[in-house]
Image (cartoon, rainbow, N blue to C red; front, side):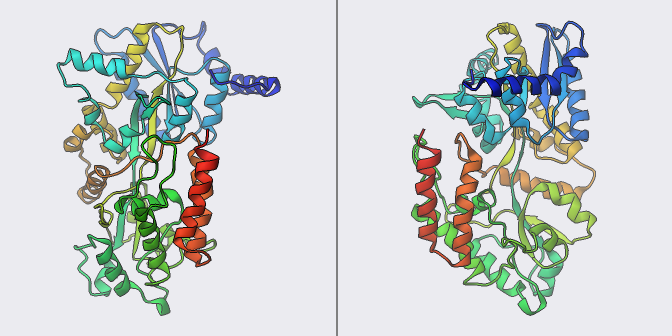
Amino acid sequence: MIRNSNILTLAVGLLLFFFLFGSFFCSKPGGLGDKDILVWVSYGPDEYKLFEKIAKNWSELKGNDYKVHVALIPWMGQESKYRTALIAGAPPDIGRVDTPFVPELAHNNVLTDIKQYLTAEETEKKMNTGEILLEYVKAAIDSCVIKDKNGVEHVYGFPDQTNGACLFYNKDSFKAAGLDPEKPPKTWDEFIEYAKKLTKPDEGLYGFGMDNSLWWSFPFFNTFGTKFLSDDGAKCLLDSKEGVAALQMKVDIYKKYAVEGGAWKSGGQNTETGFINGRYAMILMGPWNLSRFKAARVNFGVALVPEGPAGTSTNVGGTNMVIFRNERRPAAKLRACYDFLRYVTSPDVQAEWASTLRQIPVNLKAYDKFRIDDKEEEQKLKIFMEQMKTAQARPKVLKYAQLETIINPEMESALSGNITVEKALGNAVERINREVLAH
């Protein structure tokens, strides 16, 4: 259980819980029974509609005794809502949570380890141990795998959505600079050479627009082979030679080569706007902006993140579906929750989900089944799908937001030339070890 010695906080939390969610339970006389599975989600309208259909389809499968009920909660502030429900002893059976929230929930021992169900399914289907997990995008499923203090790995649910960044480039800008619009840069060295040709500061044109946050910096760190944490998770290793080289690349792009237009600065033109109006010829961006850029009539292409010493890689965003612990829940119901999540993330369902919503499937077996009517957009999404094969999960720490709070100002100081890259990362690592990892 989550411990909280402040009685007033507990009382307020209980009142907030019943205010926010009491109407859901009251709308079902007698509450939910042992054959009902309650799932909290925070999807947008189109996603929610499709998820309800998927839940209904599973509930109506032949021989299935369970029915899934879907409740919509807001995305903003969802972590507080889950904490409040846990304090009240009334969490949902299944919840959709942001990936960085999983380590905290695991640490507080409120999640169900699904390894026993994985083993049972593998035995039933005569599969090899660990074979099921290989079906999923590695970086996405890795965010569900958490080690305890003894180094034992636990699996807490399945990813339901995943995304990351690729290189977006303006084909018209490439043509104007004498570059082949069908041959984007494959390495960071090529990227710099391209960016030099694309940069015309007198005209307000730059080869690159760059975000500064840690999440947007992972493509740099990952392609340079930077290891963020030690194997036991006790120390931050970001100030390694690989980490220094990666951040130095970011700094050089702005200061040494002067091909970045200041998108990272406070008050600078952000990457999306700058890409739309032609200020930035290249940016790192996620799949959620494909439709927006197309609607803005930008003639653009999508390519893999340029290769560094460790090859191409990217950052990872997304959400996971977890099963909350409840000692009163029958064993058969826990298995039903697992079976529902396997259904949601199965190849056929993921193909329908990703094709309908234009997203990246979390199940690799769905890749070949992915189809949309816009073949140009389909090809761009398939580049994202290819990129996700080399993506790396974010560091699994109790408070991921603290990493951003600590690292971002240090990187900004390095980009501004106020301190060296080595000093910036050294400062960040010292604080991370002391404030985030010392627990």
